[in-house]
Length: 566
Image (cartoon, rainbow, N blue to C red; front, side, top):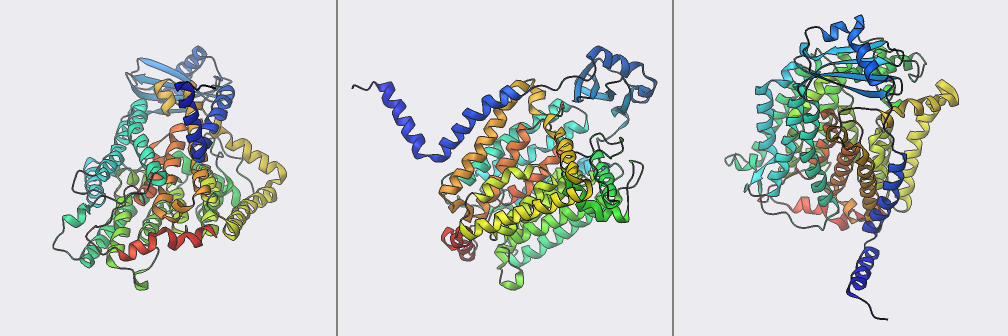
């Protein structure tokens, strides 16, 4: 039989795919998931016909405060869920008012954005001087010299995400989402390459903060960075705890936590002042229950200052975990050299100086707590059972970390795999027992029904809605599943990348960024999920002139393979 050139090329391609199981897994997932998701993907229907929703919003007396003094030239109507529509009024491309209209025509909520200087949080965190100062410090601790290094492109991509915050502050919703896409896509691809690409020695470079302080010894720089960390911690306490405008998420969580301490599941029993305030997994409310016991919240008229303080504490705890993780998990007294401590302090300073973080903390959102849980999972990476248990807890706090579990479990073998699975089952079992104990079997059903809103919500704040390409969203979701499958197969067949904390943090960042891009809703608050992971991977830098023997001993694959794999 004579083979044509085309047949030969096809055979070669098939052979290469067979020899690359990770690539084969990715292609198989796309081939199956993309058609399935496209067939099952349906746009949420409007609860009220468009014309009727606009009429109800404009004519109802209860909506007049939201429209008072507002000049608008266009209006859009979108579904929130099957019972509620969002009527948005625009002046050019800027949203100036929003009104929620229920299926029966009743006005549920209204917002007049012209009266708001900021979307939410503390106005101090949005001040140009504050943002410029934080950005300058972020560059100082993450950039390197020589300037012609890919690391500096990484830093520029991370800082470009600030544009999304500033555009949302001015209520340019579509522009805010689209401004974040280039930076997120770049960081996702870069992180995936660092995690799964061929290992290569880094190009010679020095952190900019080291190059800019040639007269200081390593110990002197450590003292300087400790003072900077202390100063930033004080700023976070002052700006975060005194925030006058917390986001509605924290009110919903605190109301649910207050219900929980009274023995009532939040699902289906929440007041209507926060729309779908019960859409989070049970651990979200359980973790805030001790705060609710001291400072209960029954409505948006109550104070959430204690919850704001918890967000500040979570940001500072994340900084501490970054210091420990980036410097090898050892205390100074355990023989940690100053060069390693510098690396950890730079990672913590990069986290606290990332400009959107201060704004995010001042909103009180639970996303900062999730960031702390993710970094703790990385800090425990040498003990897969504890690490997987922490990741399972994070998934019961917010759903997104569940996407990381296949990658976490894939490289494990034997007792390590058994311990990790046992930890995941223990955390999940405890949550299910609490659900059943408070609400019977119906409590589990009620939680699943409430959480399902996250998979069917309608929102203009997504890449797909901003570009008007919602029909292609299932393809993006299939690509995300392919990334997870590819990473899991790669780590299963070759666990070596899992022995490197940097590569593990990088693949986690890539997956979480992909999840944000593929989702129905995106807000800059979600950036804090991935920034600590980036600080431990693509944004981490070590001084090439420093003594690196202790570092190499810690990161050498063979040294950790028995711990992770056996």
